[in-house]
Picture 1 (cartoon, rainbow over the protein chains, first blue to last red):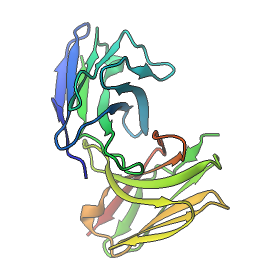
Picture 2: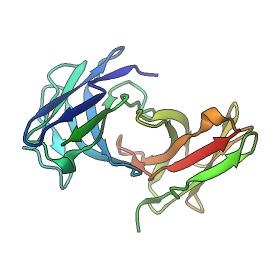
Picture 3: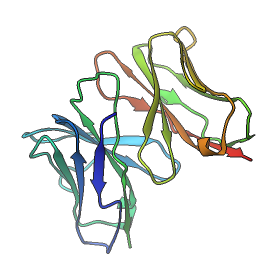
Picture 4: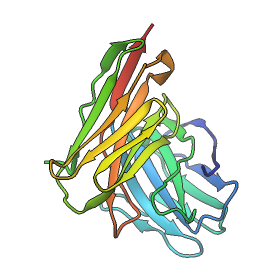
Amino acid sequence: GAVVSQHPSWVICKSGTSVKIECRSLDFQATTMFWYRQFPKQSLMLMATSNEGSKATYEQGVEKDKFLINHASLTLSTLTVTSAHPEDSSFYICSPGGTGKTYEQYFGPGTRLTVT
Amino acid sequence: QKEVEQDPGPLSVPEGAIVSLNCTYSNSAFQYFMWYRQYSRKGPELLMYTYSSGNKEDGRFTAQVDKSSKYISLFIRDSQPSDSATYLCAMRSGGSYIPTFGRGTSLIVHP
């Protein structure tokens, strides 16, 4: 399967600060990146889809000015949570697309964000 | 009604038991069906995928899809404590690369 890394794996920040999460596809070129959020004991919820070199498409209810996504290269995408609040505390997972296999979707190891 | 329904559990079984995990769905356009395993604080790992109806076996895992009933299952034979995790079903239509996920079922296999 595809090799995906995320950094950091766990971050604690104070309310009002911004946090950047990096997602790297290590062994293929990801033309598309999906960003998910997962609350405890809940399913994965798609936040946004980004294509390399273009603006991300956000799902309904997700604030694009709060969750900034940059997909500047085929191997790196970043999610920045701006002015974080405790309710933003969650598990954020990236999933690259463009692996050439239409049925397989791989996920990064996830980043746990805790906002105090 | 959610598009994909999955009992969150937890499901607790003794080591060696046969485990049955299930999902139901309402969207008849779904054609691709996946099962993911997610350990605590880790990203989901693809276990099985099937296209349309039928069965697929891989080692101790068997995935079944019954499109007429809109029902999918994952069976785990000879369950091990290392199988303890959350299992998520996911499915998508042929025209989309974005799957819809179930809530996940927490499985606990005790020695």
